[in-house]
Every structure is written in C-alpha cells, then in structure tokens.
Length: 331
Image (cartoon, rainbow, N blue to C red; front, side):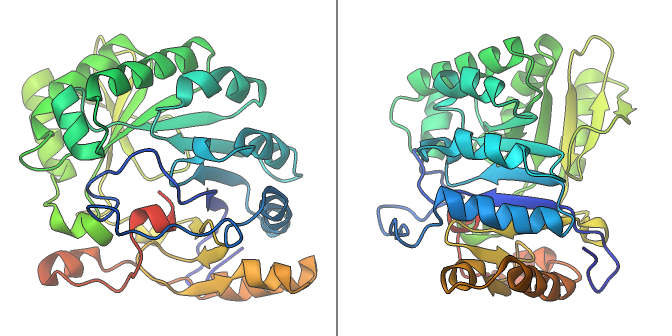
C-alpha cells in the first residue's frame, strides 16, 4: 500500500488485548480507574486471522503482536502460528513484558516466531516495582531474565526495549551495557513519547544517552546490519556480543520513512500513534462486509495517513490530540 506521501506501508502492529499483568506508570493511569474492553468488544482470534489475511493481500508483510500484554491472551501463540502461514507474511514478531515468557518460550519457538521484544526499564527490584506496579520486583525480574535466557538458548532473536525517565532509572545505563557485553541481544533506548500518561515524564533524549555511552565506552561503531522493522540506529563496540539502539521518536522523528499502521484490540485501524484518525474494521467485518470491500476501505484509509506526529508540540504545550493511553492503543 502507498499513502498520500508515497510511503510504502508494509508493517502492522497488532494489539491482541488491552489486558496487562503490569501497571506501568507511563502507560496506564494511576489506580484502577481505567476501563478495559469487554470480551465481546475485543476481536476473536478468527477475526484477527481474517483481517490479517486482508492486510497481507494489500501488501503488509511484517506483523508485530502487541497488547496490553499479549501473552495473557489465551490462544495468542496459535494465532501467531496461523498468521505466519498467510501468503505474503514474511515476519511475525512479539512484544512482551516478559513475565510469562519463560512458560511460553518453547511454544513460541515451535511456532517459529521471528523475534521477541521484551520491555524492561530497570534491573533494580525497587525501581522496577515503582515503574511497573509489580509488588515483588525481585521475583518478577528473576522470571523475566529466566525467560530471556530461554529465548536466547532457543535461538530466537531478542531485543530489549527500555524507556529512561529522569530521576528514576536513567542511572542504570551501565547495567544495560553489561547486558550487551554478556548476551547477543539488542538493547533499544526509546525516548519517552507524550502519549497518555507519558506526557507527565520528561524524556531522556537519545543524544544524551549516546553522549553517556561514549563517556563510558569510548568510540562506538555504527552497526549497519538490518535488525528489524523499526527506525533504531544501532551501535556496537569491541567486546560487545550485542548492540545498543536509539529510537528518537521525539527529538529526531522518522515520520518521513514511517511504514507502519496499527490495529487496536477492538478492531480500530490506526494510521498514526498520535491521532485517533482511522476506521472501525471490527464493525465492518461483523456486519458482513466481504474481504474485497474491507480491503477497499483499508486502502482508502491508509492513503490518508498523516504526514507526521506532533510530539514536539505536545511536549511544549502539555496538550495532545490522542484520547487513548498506550495500553489502549497497543505498544
């Protein structure tokens, strides 16, 4: 698919649930005030499969399964296995918080998943609990690290997604550097995006992280090998088994080369993370529209994909046009 700015759209981020077994401070509102979707509102596994078939026939080749926490959704690994078999789909990957990874790793390997991203913001049990809302941070971290070790042992490409917050976890940079020295993984530092609760937390810029890395490690080498679907710029250094990547969505937007669209757990097609603009695919499917009719509507919507996000403006004004939090959209 081609949008109005002549960008090729070939990557779908697919949220399979808005449920999560964490309550991260930049993702959800504090307390229990958030309203999850009812089961009848969320797409069934068969509806996901049918809509993914439509997307594949329109040129989507890469699908990232997200949530909420996707591994809390029963049957999600079977769904990923089925999606991988759709003609035209070249890569199916997963983003998870890692709490259920150790028990799912073997099945994910058998499903031939193409890669796993684990969201991990701290190695300190106290800080981890503060960020995620998980009471026993030590036990949770042990489970996550055990799951990651299993993924590495099984040969599944592994990436770590980390968001630094000023005054909370930004001093843990060395811990993540030690990880890429020890393990063949990619650690990506993602600038805090001003979506929902994220607007309350000052971002630590990619440039600042790069400056600190060079002070710690000396000269870094740009790693040119393609490591996935995203816009990260990767670096490596002598003695490292892995790489460190920077995703500077706020300070250095990559909108001109954006190739992605999103579908929420309730079947809304989202053209940009920053805008509610999109169409209700669940409603179309459930009222009996044919694949061809749905594909036509998807193409028309994708053509209208916005030119760019307004994150820099939101940071300055404290206002946003997006009405959902990250857990409602899909990571």
